[in-house]
Length: 476
Image (spheres, rainbow, N blue to C red):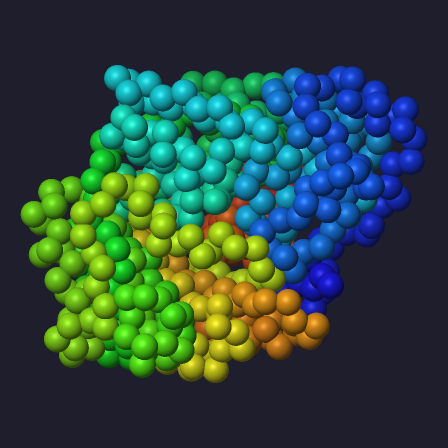
């Protein structure tokens, strides 16, 4: 079954007749180095799946190119045969934009090259890489690029959406460390966008998503990041605790970035048994800097809500890539219903909404996530990149996931009811984590001037809106 938020289709597009002419498919195969997968082929059912298992679509053909020429051939084929075109890097978009009924999927998973220049502190990565792979390789040199917080997430989609992660208060967002993007455009051209070449396009790629072409390579700035202080701090979920959390992170040093989840406690081995299944406030901090200063920075997070000590505290020094072990469960493919937004402040009214919904969650995997913003990412001018929500205090998202259920509507309704309750307290949305929620929600991801500028760039590089399976900005 496939349903979108509120029960409507996640694609918003009709199904197309599958390609029947095998000679046509062979002509595509002959033009590219890579793999072509069709319905009926071994591995087709696995190849068509994406992370959000609520999305169940059947492409006419899936192409796994090995190089830029193959990507260009796939784009030209989709255009010639008037096929809707989906692009998949890691396949983690909530809307399932990495697959499409009756169309062509460009699956970039075979393009996983990475070159690290430790002296210049620059890396060039291909779009099929995940952040787990990227971090493992760059960590060999004691270096890292801010990006993502789940190892299985692809670098491409998260970069083009902005890139929130463990290092953003210290070193900015991924787009703040992006030096250039190699791109195949709607007319099959291969070009490079940077501050020097195609600067308007480069600006749009820094937060404007996959609207402008298929990224075939990224050049990133690297920072010295070896050992960090991180882990999990767990408290009972209370209004006082969340209020204290908001005050603590507001005055935290740039070296400290954290993600926090309010959820019913899973049976984690470091939690007391009596806490399992009860609402908890799980904080995942990352301190980058002098380890001797970490205890002082983390101390306010250990005594929230009047508690002298947390239910659990596993924080300590660890290699940066090991942080991603803490979010490994998020990589599991399940049905998901997700809404996200920004908050200018975490008020008692919003806290009460969070606690109420977690208390009556419909699934053990349902949660509300909070990320404190600020620090280095907030000091970038709002018009410097297409990602422009630099002035917000928090990102908030409700993510309800569940195991197979013949009646998923109750889980979807939990997320939608949460959204209706919290929406009056929000300001804007993160484009990189939007589902198929309509044009108004896409517009909320960008200030009006930013959206207008994106539409102009879109007209220049994709006037027919070939790249529309995304948080779509139509051409002006």
